[in-house]
Length: 329
Image (cartoon, rainbow, N blue to C red; front, top):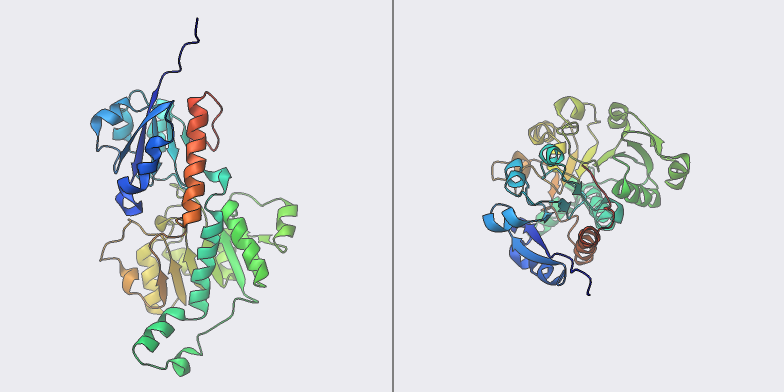
């Protein structure tokens, strides 16, 4: 007698249009040839039959709502192809007993997010955007810009969230001769602080008062939504810069625009928005001394490969009955 064949499972891959859509997800169709049938969609509700029959949802920033979960009675796992997981209704998944995983321990995005953070910091310090724009318009802007061009060396970088990505940012800050302070749920181990140039743990408000640059690397949860609101932004020095490569809703975007427009804040580097893509009404698009990028911090060619491999590996382990990694709910 032959061993009973393992049942083939249905995998629904949700890849939003603004991160590549069906074209970006096409390769997933051949990843699990013997264990799963893969359907690639651009929104979880696009194919009601595929959703109803799905045993696994892999989502690349595509929302998975309570309604989607309710419409998937066979669902066993939601796998986020990202460090973030705020686009999945965790409460609804928890009520159904469906695990939700991210790729946190893989570190797949940490290199490029850290690089993008410093790209934004350097662009702000060196006034690269106004300098470029002026030269294109035949304006030799050196006399006007030289008073606002600064160095990173000797400045204090405040990191909100010293996880895998926050640590990578801190390592680079040490190489730039910056002082590192950080905040989060709890202090890091003493050996971690020593490895990061003597990084010091501070309460959030004290970090904001102390830092010349503030870089956000926290997950978006109910507790962290608008973590930097008008009151907290007011704690920053008028010479300080804010950089956000994590989630747009960590900052009250209107309050940030107010601070920039009033001169209460020196500048901001923003890679993430709420919502995404941003609408034309977003005031940050026209605020002074901002450097903006379209959520590119996790999407280099190299990063996308690492993200896909981490997400696929976790799903493959699940299909084989192995323990899951990075369960966030």
